[in-house]
Length: 180
Picture (tube, rainbow, N blue to C red):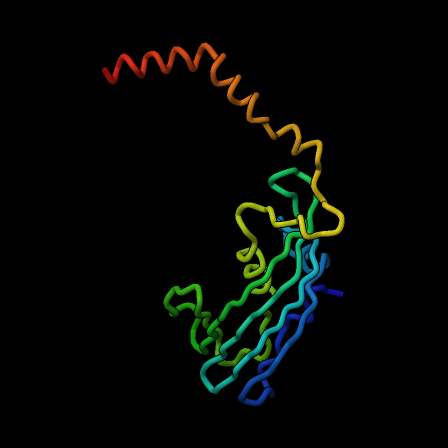
């Protein structure tokens, strides 16, 4: 079965007003996208669609986690992700539509429409650029302590390295000469 099939919303025959859709996003969902940046995760997605004769307003809200590599210690972590987005869908010719990332145009005769691409993009956009989180609250720390120890430089070692490095000394001397 196509993992993106549940994300197709039937537009024809659906009355005007608010409609709610709930989805469970998992590894099968992410795997359906070629070259995906996320391969695993577990998120709950809720979409509330307000349908009128000429416009659809879709409010997306989601929360959960995605599996990724920690940028601090390089171990696999369940990174918490949450977000809310709004998408406006207008009926009209998509070819003549102005370009706007928050407004999508679909033909009036569209009977069903997939929101899978938008769910995927909103989740990716909610991920932080630096993939770390406050994991100290967890019962078992996911951190790779050996990697953190290798990255950490004790304060005395840092001072010793600064004072005993001939390259830095030469640079400091040069800087003093230039500024005098």
